[in-house]
Image (cartoon, rainbow, N blue to C red):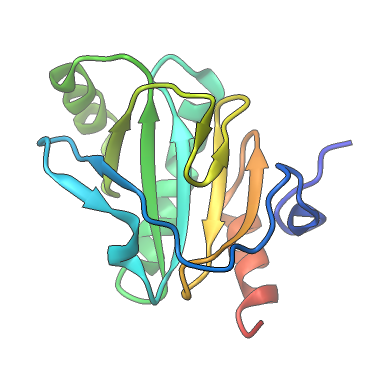
Length: 156
């Protein structure tokens, strides 16, 4: 049975719990400049680990782009973390071709990240406006899943 964000996601599907403090996580963007997730504090942050070769990830990209476009100037931002060994230029070309408008950061694949494990791609973590991890999902998520989860947990 698949548990979506709107369902039992917060029951620690990835073995995470609400962190006691904000996560310090810095990675290079497509131009090699270091970016930090804490720059988005005050917003809900959808952190999506993905790769260009991942078919499910590619199907999910339009959902994440739509979510980001709808909410980016308000209360939700999407940050994609490319999780593969790929040249910066090839990644830039892919991002441009796919018209990904949300921030994309780069990471080599590792077993565990500061947000938690990435057992498969795509993996998505959700950070609340206080900078705490509140949910995670392995597998495809939709804009509706994310909006529903955030709406249900907005004032917690």
